[in-house]
Length: 368
Ligand SMILES: [Mg+2]
Image 1 (cartoon, rainbow, N blue to C red):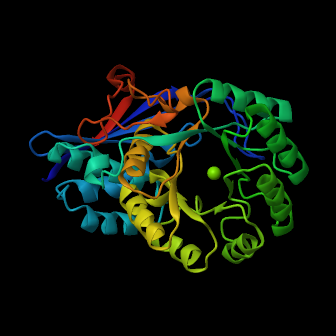
Image 2 (image 1 turned 180 degrees about the horizontal axis):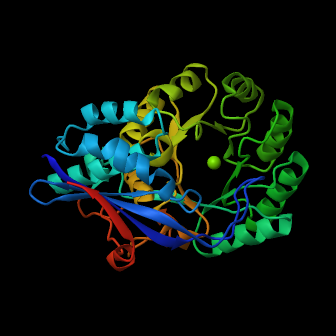
């Protein structure tokens, strides 16, 4: 199934005025996403989105269209492993984000060709996954408590804080959230790489007392030895490996060193669904879960949800708040059901319904 046309359309979307970590500005305003269309002989199309509300597609558009598109044109869309190796090598010079988009589009194409939703094609483990609301950064414990309580009122059974970023404040916010939602709601805290080992032990002990499910990214993304030490000191599960932007091999030392209880990634940061699927299986071999990171755009999130439903070792699916900002570009954004579960569409491939009117307002670059 040869690829006959590669087209990227950049279209405008709104940026929510929120932050998720200390040092991250709350921007607001407008940015662009990109729709990648891989058209195969016979007319089937595979789709992927480039960019997020934090990272404009236009920053990676040239790398995709000049660096990767020439390798895709005429290539066999069903030969994903061979293509992935060539594209990964080409990405060394400019980063993995364009590869994530291409890889998701190739899987979408395969699913459509097979007539199956991706979650069935990738493993078909379960038809729904528990979601957690992944909150924004606030100035006060009261604001976190209010955000968590509102998420629970909307049907979420789990909530994750992105706290202010210092141990004292973070513990106070975690206490306020637990008091607000009661003992029945699953809670997590994402430290966004901000702590020393000493800070992480203090916060981790507090979270254990509060019955939190995990402590995420306590130390910098390169500190495998420090995180392994921390994991031996604490009882609360540690979730690491969201960063760096890297392929499958970067997960190996974390698993081998016993430095984390869960591996993590999304299509943009790790080189697509191909790498996420392999990392999930690697995690399973080490008795670890693979927790899908929010993908930053609606199609990456759909890809991640299909993966989470395909495998046995994903506990939750992350829904970054505000929900609507990550549904831009599709007509049927993901919504939790009354039990707090998410379901990927059962139509072939990603099962996305594109917002063609919005996308048509953009500008297109193409090859083929
Ligand atoms: Mg995180």
